[in-house]
Amino acid sequence: MNDLLNTPQRSSLTNVLRMLEERLRQAQAWLPGADETGLLYHHSLRLSQEQQELAARIIAMALDEIAQVSREFDLAPREDDLAAVIGAGMSLVWADLVDTRSDKLNRFGAVDPRLAQQLDPHLDRLIELALLLSSLVRGKSIEQPPDETPQQNLTEVRD
Image 1 (cartoon, rainbow, N blue to C red):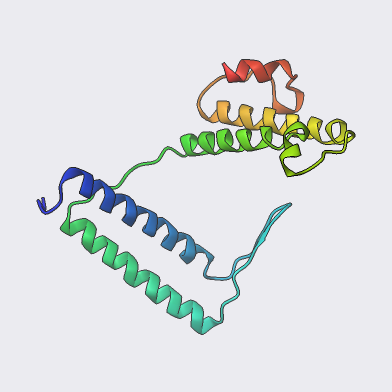
Image 2 (cartoon, rainbow, N blue to C red):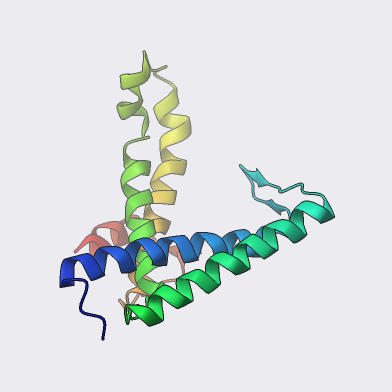
């Protein structure tokens, strides 16, 4: 084991290299130019074949360098439970959805009084579904399928 780093330094180095590796691998997956389209977004990467090849070589070199540093400083990989990642992401989105309800949008200006009736039921349903998904991946039992979940389960899930 390399003793040039104390524990906090080792943690910092490991975290930075892990983030870099994750970004590099995501870039590597996007290199072939695969488009990704959702309802409210479209991601695309347009690179020439030459640019893709050069980027692939740069990514490979960076991954090799990370591997070398990892070996040299005996950095350990971290295993992430994707259920926890999904659950945490849904919790963050839940908070953002709550802050987007019509009564909270007044921080951006006057709110049309009709907005609450039209927007809030959709947001309430999305809030409920985000909480249900978060609970499900965290191992909590959900008694009814999401398409039939009444509003009462919203308070049960929060507990």
